[in-house]
Image (tube, rainbow, N blue to C red):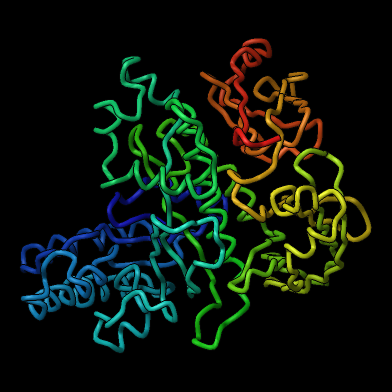
Length: 503
């Protein structure tokens, strides 16, 4: 989504989206404000819209035009004190987005839909005179959904929408991004510099609250640890929310909610080095969220969740367009935190027929773990064990999508190992002078294993992962040719610290 508070992007951007098959929700550049409707202003708007639609309408990547970002909601919900003169502001709103922009778009591009605002109720908004009573009605159009005080690792709290075009949670960029623009004394969360970079009211408190729901935060944690934990939390929150929307694709509830056909997290890129909702840092470096997005948007995904009755449910999500059916096997493994060997492995055959979602059923997770030898120690099976899922081709061990996992209790409460040692075993050249193959070893199950090639621009094949084997291999693709020894010297590795009570 090209957001209405930003810019119309360059020709190169749209050309690349065409080539890569990326569809664009294109806002006009109006956002989060009430705009005038004078003849002079509307004339400049008409010129702008004509120029941009003529420039962009031939790009197949452009999927939909939107008049503005959040201005219908702002007007209806009195964000800017417009209620006292609502009729005048509504008249101006309709002049701008309905009477001026809409006919230009419809005349110059007859192939795409135009919606007046995002979020909006689509055709229902039009029926209600273009300013709906509830522009965020989940039964229509698109929704923006933000929540900073609830536990976003809880899959049962998210709305069931037709399309969620904006949702997000904050994290901090890497310590490397700050060291290039700061003095050493600035690298503290309480420093004047770090406070000046936080433009979201109460942002650090909200990030801390979110982390405390699920993660152990060491006493006197330094800024680098806080950054790492914030990126874990952001990645897990958006993973959980996105999978919830994807699972809702093929179902509708008794209130008419569901059939969710889109999820666009906020936001992709950044404009400076600061706490934000982005998955890419200013330099282009991948945050943990960006690595997670590769998996939670995978065309085939096994997705566990816990419903409102606290039952563990497993869904298989497919975006594939198949000419014939595809036979797959969903493998459920139960691991004890102290062993690489699964205590239980169950296989569930499944047939994928077309793009959609298959509900494999539900399990009482607590009862299942109580039945597994190796989980009952101390009468705390949910603290001793966790679930791990794999989707395989039915006739081979070939993985068809990313692995997934479910933790029965918050990670600050698990009975995990007191310490895990992860080491780089080997780094060897790949297929060219920009590719390197990294082999890691671990003496125990490790969570959110994070590799950082300090000073080397590029990205890993996967990162922030769960290590459930004693060895793993990953690929680093550098932006420029890189020496093996220089790269090896640049590597830093960390994993999630376990609470002091872990055994």
